[in-house]
Length: 263
Length: 263
Image 1: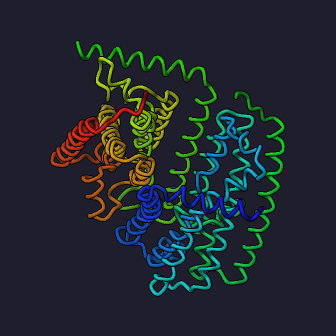
Image 2: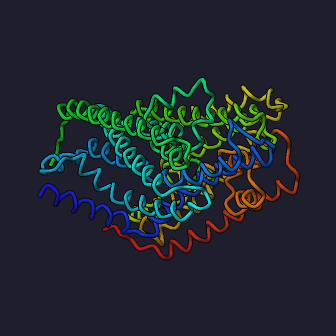
Image 3: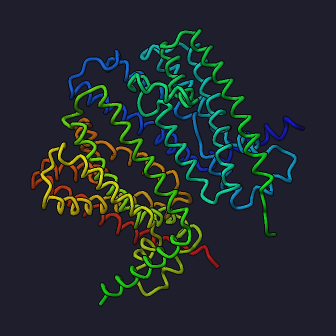
């Protein structure tokens, strides 16, 4: 019974996401290729137009490989589930779920996970197909995808904890917007994080966001050793515990304050 | 006579929006705070790039910051008057809310596009101009009467954003959901956050003709900093006019297809 509702939710989430197939395809293509195209043109401007030969020890080809490989993981990292959760708290729809014999946050997560798993398998396939050109080994790709999926869970945990601000504040979405902007910058989705000046590396290392895109990309490209990868996997597990604690705290406090009025 | 009527409608719409925003004061603060973070991230991104190279496709760091200031102002202008209306555009068709507008003695499109305003974003217009002003001297901007030229080009940026956003929204008459196209608009919009000269010729042509996102901030900044040829100026106006004509044609075709969903 406990497994049955989870499988049913996963199935339902997949059907829901792909009900409008063209929209689903547009979203993947838009979210994957436009940011990558912008990054590539930046490298083009720096190296081909500007005449640079090396930036922070990285050549044009290194940065190109980074951008192409990072696309495989940018599609796994996020989602708008936190906005949905925040809106449910604000509008009182949360009550419908509290009455059911399921974990609310787990239910929302599993429903949103289905299309991510589908995209992850597509990205894995794409990664294996392009491996001869970008020098990716299938073993490292699987490891990277695992890290990206753990990153997806951490992201949801942090987002859900932040969405709990809706218990106290009408405009909780603003915090989620700010979080999304920080994530896009500090996850390595816009530029590789090792391009940051050394003096500010502590900024991105202080958050788990680098585990979403930068980390998996570094491992897939062979820039991280297996030992480094295992250490980072350990950090990811610590962040999972922190995320879980944050949810317990914020939702524990928030639900005590929650009032749902109306019929 | 007609102009007076439309100005009066616009005045009433603006007044209603002002009153609404005055009631939700925290909304004002959160909107401003969110935009400040977004601006900070865009500035930081270029800060990271310029920590590695002295110039980017001929643009120095102050010139790029000057461009970003203009881009932020141009975008804030769009946000103040139109953004919310475009987000609500799909509801007009899907929920049959267009019915009410069609029965009013004014052009339904005018009513649809001026109904909601985000007064909070007014602050960002000045913030963007402030950023441009701060870097104007270092960027080599002549200043003086040329600030009037900045305002004229901001209007060009605004007109571009309107016709482009409309072109991405109008398909709601033919599709049931339009959020993927709206998201795609914002994916392409990210291209407008970079100077157009960094792009290779084919991509640059695309974003100066087919989807002219470059007119929102990059071309205006280039025009006031270095000037543009008459041929390019004519090209800018011809492209915007063509988009306007196509948008008008699609609106009329869409209206013919529209079936009321309301009771």
